[in-house]
Image (cartoon, rainbow, N blue to C red; front, top):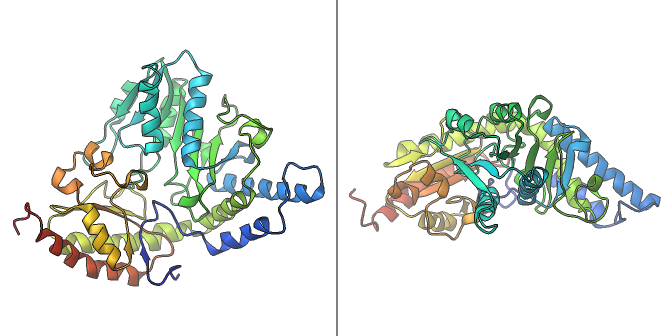
Length: 393
């Protein structure tokens, strides 16, 4: 499958993905002739409303959920905030949140604000991770109290790809009457999810992480879960989120979910093989390089590699000269000179954390692209190390 731009080798898919051509095709009628308001009584608008229903069914099918459990939002960040704030409003007597030290800023920053901006009204427990980015389940169990309103734990880490045992964690929360939310933005479309079998109350996803457009997301709300809307307004989304629907993007997300279901085998076989080829060669060829994250409990597309004694930003600039796109961490924290909070939590040495590069592949990547990156990276790292006062050769 060819890249969208022949001059670019795009390996930054955990930041955002190419919109699939099939998704663009599905969206176009709703950007042109099918422009009716889906809430209108006339047939012209009603047909648009039916397309939203169809998209809702496609999303539900990918997640193993029921269509009425799917609420469309603007993005994963909105979905995260909505779930957590709903739980706190549902149980105003509870003041405790359990999360991890490696969450995406969408959850991390919200929890920090709840602790500080609200006058220390809420208490947050942030679970530690080990050197491989894995959680201590004994610590998690001990963190759950009668005062805990919600647990919010990502399904898969956006920087390392490490997968957390959310099924087990949700079950433990359920047994204690605690709501459980997972930010599954990176997991959806890459690993199989069947919410009918799980005790997850809320799940967030974002369209632009699975080849749908930016500006559309989903909050799954398990049937029977108490819920307080974040965005008040009209009756849209069964009264759970006011505002006229972003029809074209919702339809595009529905089509992207269909494609994700079809291509998940490819994601976990061919894409994983490409990732392993890239990762294995770079670690073997380039001295003082190390993998960040668990070797196997990881998304099939993600490799986070540290190259000691060089700056990640400098590596990216040199890669960019060859048309290679990757990341030095989360796109939501780019521009910061501080090492990734995820790698700091894992105890990655300072000399390595600064030189970390996240390669995140997709079904659109090819063997030739991977081999070109393998060919270019050693010289890039070698040239930068010659400039480093810490590199001894």
